[in-house]
Length: 202
Image (cartoon, rainbow, N blue to C red):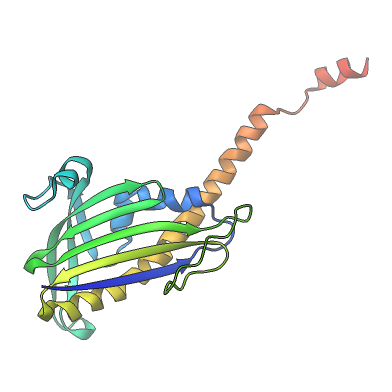
């Protein structure tokens, strides 16, 4: 059984807060649907192969992808599997139990710094932005050597699109945050009425 590690890092544009980005990662249904390979998903129970903490603490989904087995969509088919989602303070962990012994563990996190925060320390061998926030996806892939290249190709082709969509959805959520804060500010400080103005002038 071969094992591979893949890391994707995507900068988050200025103007999107850490809270908005993490909230996107915590939305399981939205995260699943962001993957362009997914055609359907539904809640399910943990498989017998799940660890005790995964079975007790994780949220489980049955997911079906449409996979291209040959380039150009010449031959494609459906693949169904179970996946565990577990929210972290700064992101989410997922564990996919796919057919043919394919096992994929992922950790998505929001790192970096906001404008009013100190810079995050550098890490050896990690090509991350020196300023601002970013999404970091760390993947541990375990599968037989014959499946390795095929699974990696599908991961690489879909996950950059997923990163871009997460950022797009986080930007939309940030706008909702800003609008809500504006409404709360107006409610806390309503404009003076004509009656109050007359009283203040007398």
